[in-house]
Image 1 (cartoon, rainbow, N blue to C red):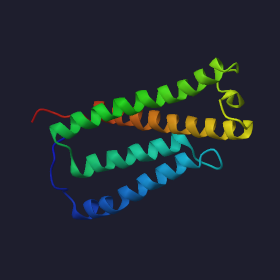
Image 2: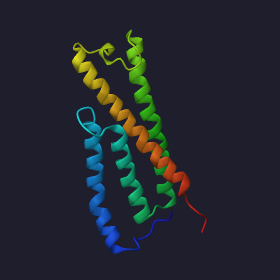
Image 3: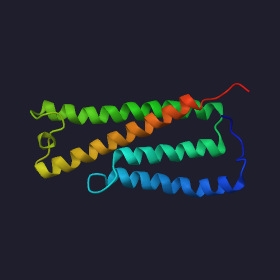
Length: 144
């Protein structure tokens, strides 16, 4: 993918207006996934879709491709580490994997809420990173 002006001005305008709202909505879904519909998977998928939409409509130069590829790998790995780290912390504190009341908070209700919140963040990061990696590897640059 090469950086280029958008082929279609309507697509460029709509995308430029839509992408920030998609990202805010994705963060909202991740933040409120423990209380209602949505969560890390949906939020991560929407966040990645906003970045993919930008890449499709506006293109990427070589440096942006490399940077986005590195960021995607970092997001996926850090999401798995957050998820696994919370589970491991629960086990180190005497509970089962993802047994949130074992987390080091005074109130078990607070521990449960913050544990699920951390898991939602980890899942969101992992899903966004994995979707971006899939996109970058399948729609990578061609030698023109």
